[in-house]
Image (cartoon, rainbow, N blue to C red; front, side, top):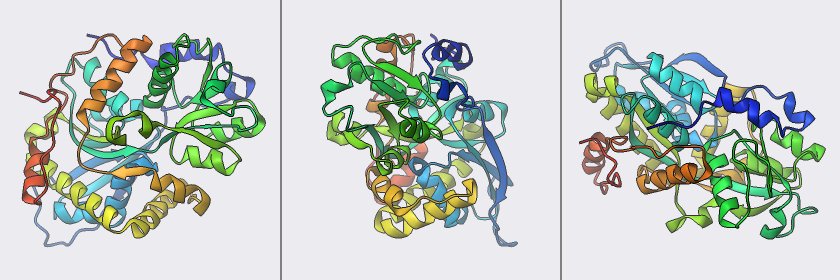
Length: 368
């Protein structure tokens, strides 16, 4: 059993094909920030089995359940006197490292780092305990250079990181077209350039890339620069749903503090319900949180289309995570993993039942 190949070793291979602009990029996924933010709680509020729960997430719209849940106090409300301490990350590897080191207890994260973290630890580090978001990934292109899907052949397309969720999805789509690309170097019928989402818009503006397979809001930022959406990844999946963000917990924390995990999941479920019932308010709340975390909010021409393409839900869409793992295997980035036990949806289904909602399935990948 083996995880996705270490990104540190693979990054050197990716550099072979990097354009000069991309050579100046900082290592994607290496940055994290402990913002030290704690929610204020009433002095007489009852604590659960621990004084503090440390949660991690990205300052991304696809992590809006966490952004809004913290911003609106919806997560803290369920935790009573147990305080939330937040940390933010730029990509999955650093968040997995924090979970393994005990720096965070619970995290919002994408499917590929979840798979990677689970397999590298031989199934001992984490469990996926809930879904959070689906969708929000698009192939956007320069319309002067690419006018149809078949025109992608021979072009230069950016993905966020070698072996990350979008990179695997793009490599799988390329293979389905009958085209060949060496996954590690990015060379082939399509040239794949791995670069941080933060500099992808500059690479597009400079003409260094012809398009990108990226998550929101990067996709909408490119559209604001004149790119056009050629393909929405949701159109490639059954019911147009696929996991983009799920919630993980350290197995130790889950075992020792199930009451805290239940409170966080109840807060997540209720946050998603509030988001879906109040989309405009929720979008504004997420944007406020982004401004506090990054120093910038998103303009309407970016956040409006980006928000519309993301679905916030509790179902982890386990079958799609299993499919994503198979895509990574086919691309040569992952040896056949054993994912049995990666899910524990017991607490989530308890919360959903109490909320009068339907239970969700683990696609046969649950802890037994």
